[in-house]
Image 1 (cartoon, rainbow, N blue to C red):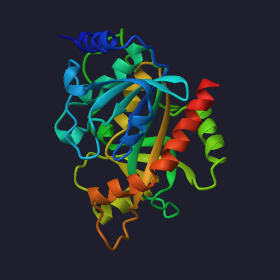
Image 2: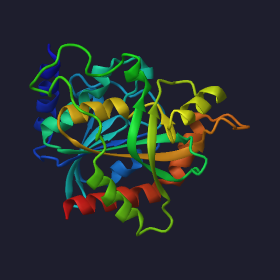
Image 3: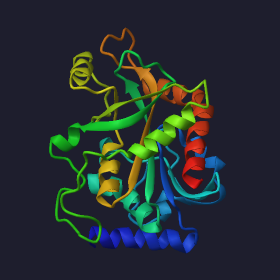
Image 4: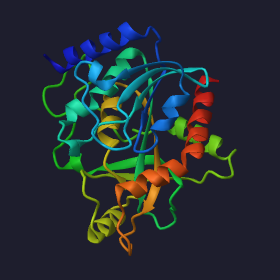
Amino acid sequence: MTLYDQVMEATACVQSRSSMKPDVGVILGSGLGDLAVEVQDATAIPYEEIPHFLRSTVVGHAGRLLIGKLENVPVVVMQGRFHFYEGYTMQALTLPVRVMRMLGASKLIVTNAAGGLNAAYRPGDFMLIRDHINFLGLAGMNPLIGPNDEQLGGRFPALAKAYDAELRELARTVAAQWPEITLHEGVYAHVAGPSYETGAELKFLRTAGADAVGMSTAPEVIVARHMGMRVLGISLITNTATGDDTEEVNHAEVLTAADAARPKFAALVRGILRGIGG
């Protein structure tokens, strides 16, 4: 089957379970999946029941697709994502984004847990992604490599303005209403993982201009833009990653930080959706 055929088969499966046409797609990163339980009138579909969807193998990723409403906005939500380090191809791990678009979503809110490279960032802060450095893509691992199907998007999509300026302005307006939310704006570095970075690597990333680092997001954003979706990216800073750390980070600490930030995260995303719906 072609990629287009796989996307359409997965889309048809989801449509057979829910007739709702979502306006916004949401990808929930490590430890942030609890927002999915707030989706109203939700149809929840385990990934293993959707053709060509992969299996999420990482703790903190539930592995369900939900269609329903948040703040009265029709949404399709990935409760857990796939990663390159799980052994999946770039095309396969980004297929759900294409399905979201085919279901009707014209906008994508993509979230992640990230290490703060910027010395001003603290665990529990959020960062609007203004731009990214896709180290995997620069090394030849781009989800668009291979034959291009014009039914999915053009051969050479522009990424200079991948992260939508109007959606970022909306997010800043929402965050300003919540004194307990600290919202930065910066550059996200995408690395492969699953090992965390060495001190020298972290210093290199800072020198390259990155403010936060993580193991996801950039491939999904590339595919979303390939299909003409407007993108808003939000990183939850779960740990400092300045290269001067005296203690090494681990995934359990990432999940703990994400859990502590859950109320603020929910308030931020729900406020953004209210703005989109309004």
